[in-house]
Length: 333
Image (cartoon, rainbow, N blue to C red; front, top):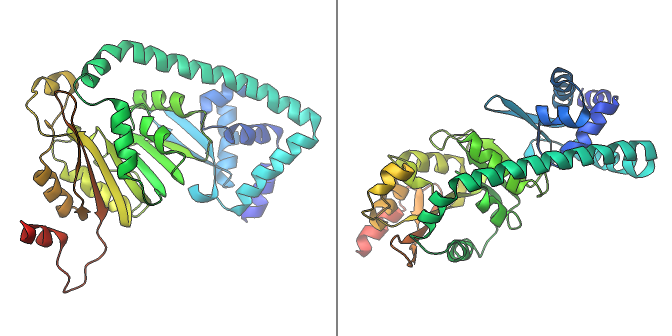
């Protein structure tokens, strides 16, 4: 019985401390071990009890196991939300528990600082590469403003940021979306993103390791999908776009920020770009094939590389006599 399992799980001070920490941010078992000053095997046992009771959710990222507090929109239940409120009240009413939680948060601050330090070190190592690529196209500020405008006019709902990189897009849209799931194949990039996003509410942003060729999500999980400077890494864009269509709800939107077709061959070797940008008709056809109705793209000139923003909507099931948007588009040519 779930209620009994929850009450049993709460019958240990270490697990209460873990729940308060997870209410702040997602943490690796090793990080919890540091804060609690307990061995990793012991913390792992406590984590298993919390997960079995439905109070926490765990996931693997390489060799690390991360934990986050379960939330109602992330697989939890009203009972888990009630537990969070109960523990908040307990901290207010119980001075001893409050002192322990405050000490745990001080220890957690050291982990935050370590994450930020590693992120800064990564940026220093790669700064020259990033600066070189940025000099070739419109400013980040201009691109971000245009993207925000392209996605305005309706709620973002549950947003999936594919290839999140440093987490900038998740940070940019966190206030507008119900929840942001940021996915990246690179463990190194996820750790950089985690440092950038760690001050956002723990139930607002979730970081997940995954490949855009096979997304680790159920079908129709999201309302909005975003590819920001990611699709040019795909030798065949139809594969990641088919995956994006699968995880989008009918009527949901996809936004692709990438380069217009260009001839800068050096980007293949220096930055591992598999595609040298995209022609409008080429990408529109691929979107059509994968179940989208594309809109007219936006163009941002300003450099040797032109940035474009393509927005499309996940097609609703067609009726027997309804023509596809591809047929309509060809008829209009």
